Amino acid sequence: MPDLIPVTIIAYLCMMVVIGAVYSRKNTSVSDFYLGGRKLGPLVTAMSAEASDMSSWLLMGLPGVAYLTGGAEAGWTALGLAAGTYLNWLLVAKRLRVYSQKVSAITVPDFFANRYHDNSRLLMGISALIILIFFVPYTASGFSACGKLFSSIFDWEYHTAMIISAVVIITYTCLGGFLAASFTDLIQSIVMTAALVSIIVFGISKAGGTDAVINNANSIDGYFSLFSIHDPKTGGSNPYSFLTIISTLAWGLGYFGMPHIILRFMAIKDKNKIKTSRRIASVWVVISMGVAIFIGFIGNLLSRQGVIENLEDSETVIVRIALYMSDHGVLLAIIAGLVFAGILACTMSTSDSQLLAASSSMSENILKGVFKMKMNEKQSMLAARGVLMIIAVLGVLLAWDQDSSVFRVVSFAWAGFGATFGPVMLTALFWKRSNKYGAVAGMIVGGVMVFVWKFVIAGLGGMFAIYELLPAFVAALIAIVIVSLITPAPDKEITAEYEAVTAELHQ
Image (tube, rainbow, N blue to C red; front, side, top):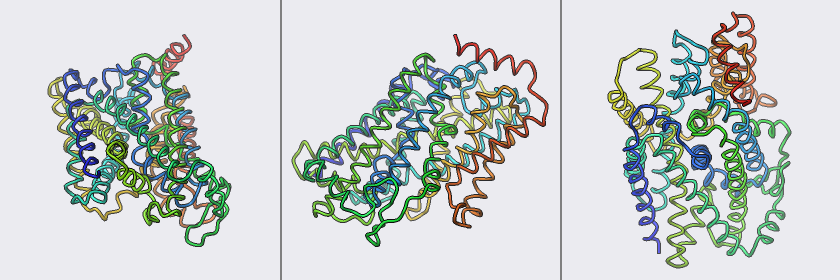
């Protein structure tokens, strides 16, 4: 029944384009295009934020790590991301929603510049460039993921598959903007959830039950543990050290600086519904990551049983289980198609948000903000769509070489955003004494430290071999505090604005 799989995927892609066309009629201003006019409900806000966050890592990366090495690396990473997700919703979401409206900000660079009344536009320019630097290759990695996925499964030519995927993403995002991206993200999160549930139910039934999966995991040295990691090359295990655990948990710090996620906080219609969104998002993230890890365990047992092949590329474990599922009747073949659509959905839901964030940085913040180009609403909308298409084309060009190392930029980009924007965001929202000089220093120190730690210090090994996000985040935070304290305090207008936001939050 494999022919049903591409039919299901094509139907799914067509639905995304239709959604984009429908929502194109609702974009009457640039604010609508980039922020949905702040009209999102709590469910769409929660699920679009989490779908934008997870990317193909949820259905490919996380099960792949669990399949190969067991529960330690996958488990601690999931715990760090779950904690980061919850704290981001708890600390940042409501305050940013109120503050961003107070200072009339529709993008992250807008918020930083308007929060500190930076008339020089230096903050806006630096933050917009950071978004472009990290998001263009990040988007390319998403296009590449689509191309590689369908090239390997259906023997499609890589470039054809990659371009088709990119055109679909560009089309619905360019037509419908933020509202289309957010609503399709909701659909994509549902498809991702259905994919996880389908695979785990089918996999458990074919593996011989939950007990069989757990017994297999327990029988492998260091596999079913949070404090040791299985070595598939030797069959033995190695300790998962405290330093490594802290480094892995540090992934959660990245959330405070992710533009494509925190934009959802700015877009929710009712600030008082953020608690509902937080609960939905947190529960979904914990359950989905737990299920993804357990699928890795299931795949390991199915490989040992000879049901699926022993995988050299562990990240294809869900793909292999889905292909095996497709041989068991029409209904399961259609469900397998939805699983592949779910993998595609992970990538698309991240790419569309990244395209919008990068596009807004160029058209709103660099062209109109830094260079002060005068445009009416119609011209601004044309510029927004034009810049989005240019950025997408650059992403396609960067993804053209299927053997390129573009995937390596993803974890580095996460660290880059987390270290440059995270500390600035937290101090902008919670420290009245912080100022624009401290914010600029924090961005620069965080960005430089990410590069220095990654390419110089980490090579020393030992205690220095940790994820660059952690030391860069701490260094940026220190820089913000020191520079803010040794430079002039914010003027009364800025502090009055801060106090007004605080008062509104306590109403």
